[in-house]
Image 1 (tube, one colour):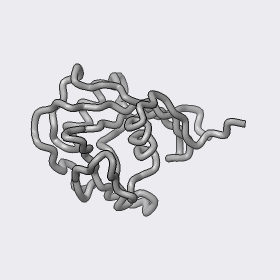
Image 2 (cartoon, helix red, strand yellow; image 1 turned 135 degrees about the vertical axis):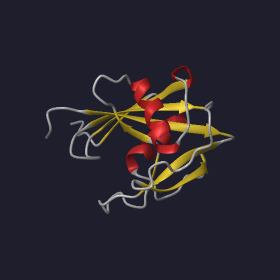
Image 3 (tube, helix red, strand yellow; image 1 turned 120 degrees about the vertical axis):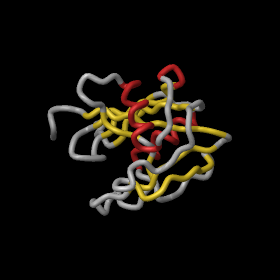
Image 4 (spheres, helix red, strand yellow; image 1 turned 180 degrees about the vertical axis):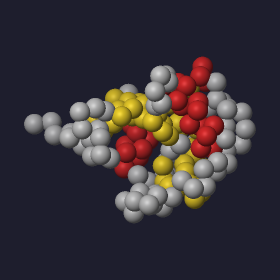
Length: 147
């Protein structure tokens, strides 16, 4: 197992009871064609809020002010990739611009889904964060042996 953890930010763009998801275009068949939240890893020297703002603009072309991000869930995940991850989920209900696919090499579609009718083809990691968000659960773990 790796001796470090990656830190991911996930952005829940929420409006009128819907959340924006992107469909992955991935060489790994485990993830190709599955839905995901706009997200990404922190860059060196970057705060989690700056990363969330950057990822939202890079992936779907919207501008979010850091003050408009609300932390809604943290998920400590093992088994979603080579290294364990700490995922921070941020809700945004205000932003500038209309979401579009800004990364067609990594994403094949951008679509709104009702929070109570998410697609079955959703990567399990963000799906767990979305379920926790809907239930108001601030912290969770996934993929760890608790024995």
